Image (cartoon, rainbow, N blue to C red):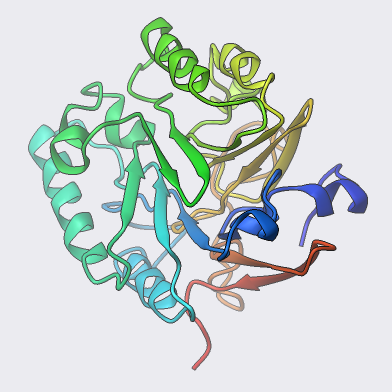
Length: 296
């Protein structure tokens, strides 16, 4: 597993790192404050409708991921898809067909509390119209077992901005929380400038981070970059999820962000999800990488 530039002491303080995330690993969470721990699964960048290299299994990878999540025991409390549910298309009818197929396939998930935010492949060409028809609002918040979750939309605007209206909504939503509140934010693009030349940034993401900064226990989970990545902005931890379709190169490691080639010897290398279990008050972490398909 890669810890990027974060040392072990910092890493053990972090919220959880994509994949399956246990609430007791999130900043500000104490089992003494809650009678029962819970966990959720983050899945991202399915790109349903994508075909061809570098994933010859593109038509069945999502189904395999559904089977893998269904095999988790105990089952997660809820599942969050952080964007690019479908692969981009200029054809509005085809866009809706792909969304309908995606929704039908994930209907096989045993966990029925499934939530969504769009990626630019889902929403940038029609400002989220089709996404809203199939999956509801593109930004919203909800509370679950003492934690406040915020879903942001930084893709419906083709300019990769949250926009003044959404930032005003975020400010008002946060105003209802105390500074000690336990807050989890979901976005598709990173809120910080990871690699702007690759569209790995949010134009006004710093404004959202500034709004979050007064709150002591904030964690951000995002997708878009198709790989594990960890970043700190002050005390706020940001964690990227792997893709379920193909991995992308490390930020700025090559001139273009072309997908990494398929490796027949390790066909799902770079894809999958991660399980984090927190044991006891000392916050000891056990981290296990899980493939898209669990071994028989």
